[in-house]
Amino acid sequence: MFNSVKALFSKSDSQHALEFEEQDLVPIAAAMVLLEVAWADHILQPEEIHLIETALTKLYGFDHTQAGRVFKQAENEHKQSTGLHKFTRTLNEQLDLDEKITLLTHLWRMNSLESTSFHYEEHVIRKIADLLHLRHSEFIKAKLDAKQT
Image (cartoon, rainbow, N blue to C red; front, side, top):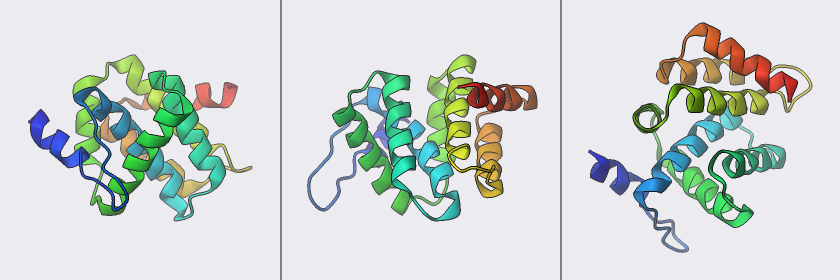
């Protein structure tokens, strides 16, 4: 199964091939769900890109260049993707509960970029939380944690 997921993530863009190892699958999947929230309003703002890259550096210890590579791969995958299931499946297989809640907190930070909560983003966050098998209390905990930071 990992080989089929790895094959999915190792597609190349038209300029140059981006090779990823198995350990890169989780960061790419995380970037995909972050990107999905950012794209909820069908506008990808520079602040949202910065927040995604910052989340990747905090979650996975990447430097700016590595975070940019993972974001670029996720952006390419997002253009061709038909859903989040394959990405949330990877996250479910590899992340423990605390890691899922931390990721969800970063999703909520994406929602707080605008002065008011954006209902489309909130809907996508709820969908992702459900796909990650998180309870409502964990959904709320992540939302409150995002507001405190």
